[in-house]
Image 1 (cartoon, rainbow, N blue to C red):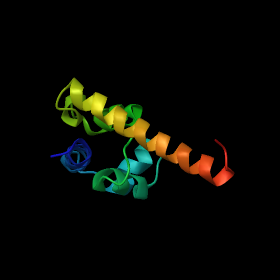
Image 2: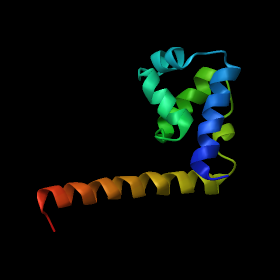
Image 3: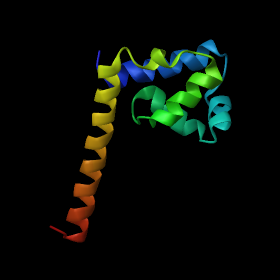
Length: 97
């Protein structure tokens, strides 16, 4: 199972164990329920501080979201790659080399 899918399932599981709706969790995190849905479906990757808050709010160990340190590194790499892709799109749009 890839890291993003594993993370999305873990977020969904933590929320359900805490008996919170996506809206309730989003409200407690000051983000929209659509963002929570994106995290749970793997369409978006939450920042590490958000994962820590989800851990606190749901009373689940942070390790639930990371099988090991390698997964955290892989998640960070996924985020960096996503940022680099967006920067490339911006460069192309602005015709910057």
